[in-house]
Amino acid sequence: MTINIKKCTLEDSRKLQEISYETFNETFKHQNSPENMNAYLERAFNLKQLEKELSNVSSQFFFVYFNHEVAGYLKVNTNDAQSEEMGDESLEIERVYIKKKFQKHGLGKHLLNKAMEMAMERSKKKIWLGVWEKNENAIAFYKKMGFVQTGAHSFYMGDEEQIDFIMTKTLI
Ligand SMILES: CC(C)(COP(=O)(O)OP(=O)(O)OC[C@H]1O[C@@H](n2cnc3c(N)ncnc32)[C@H](O)[C@@H]1OP(=O)(O)O)[C@@H](O)C(=O)NCCC(=O)NCCS
Image: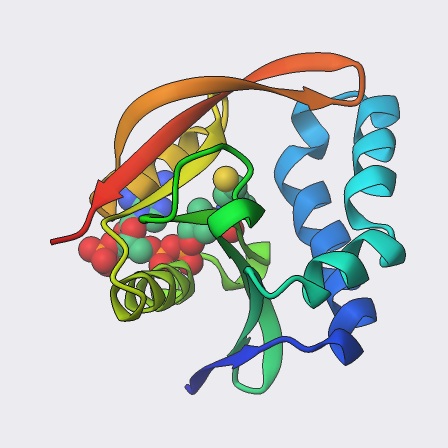
């Protein structure tokens, strides 16, 4: 078994769109209406939007490969690319998604460690993220990885306002 992490470039936009759709659907389809899912998918993962994000110097995407197959991805933001004003001493994990068939093999941890490494290289003091209050699996994973809840913000899934917990890990 081999696990590799590779930074995405603009040329990866279609591959990124494919895995974004697939993992978002797998994760949230059963708890949200098709209308709200479609509205979100179209807004967040249209090619133009993804290309814009891939071109932002303060955002970085990574694929994780499991035996040469793309198994998941990570998106991190710094500075003003962060989705909340957390300041320049923070790094945001905006997305971490592993395809269902590859979950519980240590890949999510690999991606989180990558984010941690990047934060430390950039002398950041904390890593933070937003996670839907109903996403119990991810919340348990983040707790296991040392994150604690430090706040909440609202988020729109289509026309439905949902609550995201803000979870933070302090780096020393
Ligand atoms: C959350 C997610 C990224 C975790 O990735 P993963 O590859 O399945 O997790 P890992 O195998 O790397 O687990 C790392 C550690 O966390 C633990 N863990 C993982 N999920 C857990 C859970 N639901 N409850 C408790 N512990 C959990 C593992 O046991 C492992 O512990 P260890 O280091 O002692 O062995 C993955 O389940 C996923 O992509 N889910 C769907 C998308 C999603 O919800 N993303 C987050 C959006 S905010």
